[in-house]
Length: 120
Image (cartoon, rainbow, N blue to C red; front, side, top):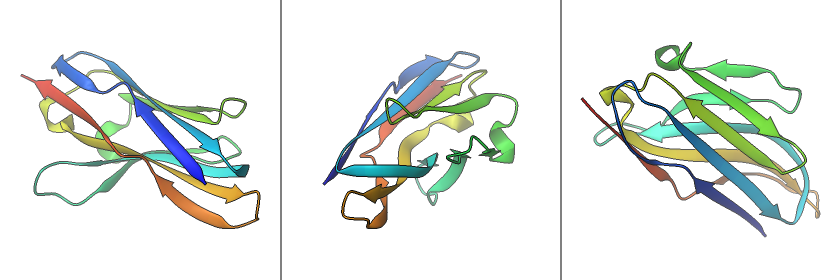
């Protein structure tokens, strides 16, 4: 079994910063892509940022230049540094991790979500 534990959400004023973390643990053989998605009320869940095992990153246009995704392979953890936050960044943020388990099954795992609220 694999567990994902997210932390770092909260409330902040526009222009502020938050850092999200997502740590994976359990029967992990290797971790491939790691990413963050978000879902605002009435909207579909959408990719915010992703990072491959090789360190290649990909960002939604709306967060380029403001958000930075990174990963610590020793800690099996992915981070999302969010700067210059805007009210439209308000959403529940979910981490997504593609993991090969010790039984060599590859599956996408989702965190439970952490709420980010940005006030104007």
